[in-house]
Length: 439
Image (cartoon, rainbow, N blue to C red; front, top):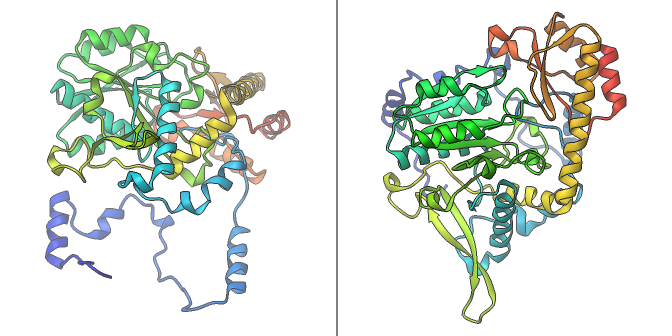
């Protein structure tokens, strides 16, 4: 391969020493042995198309199509069929970063539309082109806060998705940043605990609805964060913003999130597409790029890259970010979703999700085998506690092609028996009743 320069043994040794591991195999230590192949792949040198298609069909038959009652960051929402038809067009599927605006007008236009829709949903002043995913977008927000306030410590509510927290921990380590955590009180961020820990911090990161499905009211804590001269950062589910208060109404400084609930299939957990929006005051601290609209020399409307604070254009150590990118194909996906569904369609999808979630919640309590954990408002996700054997329950439901809610005891021993259920607009009453009957 032209210009391919493989690493030497000395290169590999230096890199391993730098990150503190002894071998390349150690990099895969977190992958359970049961999930590793441990053998050479038996791949033939050639096979006919007919036989290859048959092999793929045999492999596909091993998959189960499950009725999903689990969320926790990946949601089984409806995908309008028009979306894959549009994004599979070759001019979109093969498009690359729009460095040359004169030949990238289509790409630049839909990125501009994506930004416009995100600012409309969140109420914020500006949005960038798009991010890898929600968790890394939140890491970018952490960097922005540290740069703006010159403080090395940031606080994170324990109501934030644990996956996001792990990403924050990873990126904080290599930027010499420190994370502190704010405790919960009845399922919401504890304002008093924040006040005890806020001195000398760059701000607070929260989530709404939070990881446990609770819709939090951040009016008070937002004021406290700003009084402590920090930035208030929210990571949110964009599909809920036409129903609950927007980050702008909570006076948020930076808003991040995962756009997967906007019609993106679960795809075994990703990759998806994140976003980051902020105030005009912080626009120069923003990572990535911003697409804008102007007029060309002939006076015609033209789309351009207005802001490009990326490592490709300036010295790496001076860049706002070294991890951001533009997932523009998936940005197009959610842009088409928002355009096709419209505000009323997105609201209706959430209304059906909320109705289903509250029905399931009430029916679970009526069985006498579950009890309420939080007396708080929720939308499509909620936590209940059971005295049943959760592992047996999950296996029993899988036999009926149902994926149960997430057992929170696998994340925290203190939450043993607690299950986080999710219901989307794809779950009808018959499926909800079948789940109750199976339980």
